[in-house]
Image 1: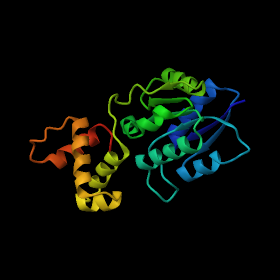
Image 2: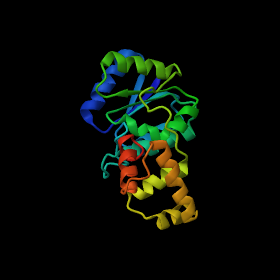
Image 3: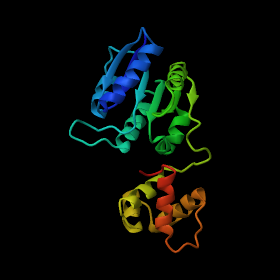
Image 4: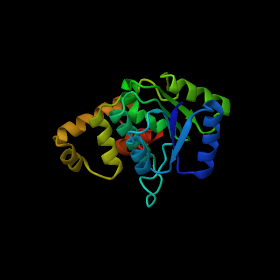
Length: 213
């Protein structure tokens, strides 16, 4: 009998996805979590041998926090690090931000599938089945977009309004290194460096492809 954890803070969506899980795996034991902190506690429960986790990306850390994609991404990073063989499925209306985890997903040993919340129920169920079988299906994530962690961190700090000097301090590198990271990011995003608003253009393009929220 499979143990399945569903992570979603929206009651209607949680009820909907739970019904699909019950249809696909009628003998499964289903547990739900509405926040990242509750999901952490459930996953750490040694009495459960989890076969599948289905997670929305936009979730709160706890009941006092707003739902954010950053929280869901952080939880996924933690899950893949602590439970490298756990089968995962992400269902979200903002799947493009998963490009930030592309390297970790590619190296995850368990199944990993994704589904848009607007997908047909039969397709969602199919991807659940793939995930629990250990299959990876993430074709919706943009292919060929590879950023090193320090490049992605540069974008994220810049998106918070930090200048290059402050970014260099955060990353413990020189300002010259940060400028080098910018050029690498712009190469990947195919940004024309002759543009006068290069920084803004780069951040806007990064946001379009899901590298920052």
